[in-house]
Image 1 (tube, helix red, strand yellow):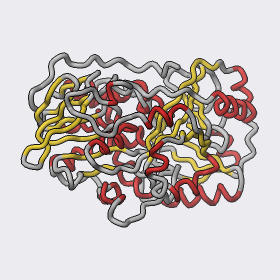
Image 2 (cartoon, helix red, strand yellow; image 1 turned 90 degrees about the vertical axis):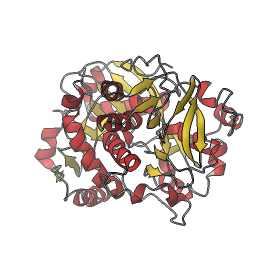
Image 3 (cartoon, helix red, strand yellow; image 1 turned 90 degrees about the horizontal axis):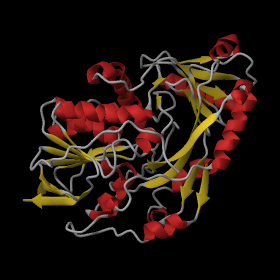
Image 4 (cartoon, helix red, strand yellow; image 1 turned 180 degrees about the vertical axis):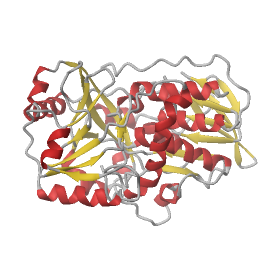
Length: 444
């Protein structure tokens, strides 16, 4: 099943012999880190095993939101919104970013109270969050809608961007500032000199370096395992469809229990289930069962567990390999899972029930993406004490697209020893081993 059509970034032909920082992973996090570092005058190589932005960075909903986030992410997301506002001008390229607002629907009094608490958490941030109902809510929804709602959390300062444009635009911006952008160039592992990172070994050769940023998304756990590091990370599959252009739909993005949608730059809509995801049972499900026990108790209603071919595929994956032999990253260039027709059909049917005008919409494409999740649904943005020179920026748990530019700036700060954009302690890698017992505490 082909994924969405992503703006093509042609990789550089020449491999640099040495750079200050190698960034592993060409999604929005890695591209943003490369941009930040290159803009500050540091030499950077951005290495991607496939194409820039081909995995979850182009397959997500395209929301840029501070609303309904884990409180630990709020300050970083507020900074990220500020970056998004100036990003197109900074890059000289379109990311599709626009502030169009986001609505979180309240189907009952319990949901209203939940969103009201989330609204109160946003008071320190300049996003205009408020609870709306009655005529005010009706004006934000298409005429003739049939949603019976207690109200909604409305955040006009939230917005959207185009996932198929954003990471490529950021990567090209990094290249214009001096970064090498290397596609079809998997990093097999690292070499150490005097205990510190001294180089990475790619499928195309060696690149000497002083530091590495691992922004490999769903592949980060396997890369960490090859270094003897334990990163508890699992994957869930989320399915999305897009419609052909449709007049009369909502301008603000909307989340409800049954469906989520946002307007696209082409006039169509991206539509997904509000909650439903598929979690394949794989060997890591057992390796990290204890880490994820609290998350599973909280999210079990939204997950469809599935045992199938992926278990055997991942069971056969080596967790260590020699650097002079092909790595698992070279055998699978792009994670392209099959979308769930059942989940998408149900979401689209409920959308049509709520907004009859979508009965005229033509479904143009369906795809799925592989979301990497951590036990507390909060990312890792952190140096690794046991491997001096290594920094991790991964585990964004379905929240990475909007927060990506801010995360890239934060990890760049950590790499070069600058004052961090925000307090990085909630994102420390050591929380999984220092007895903190990280658990999800809120947000979607």
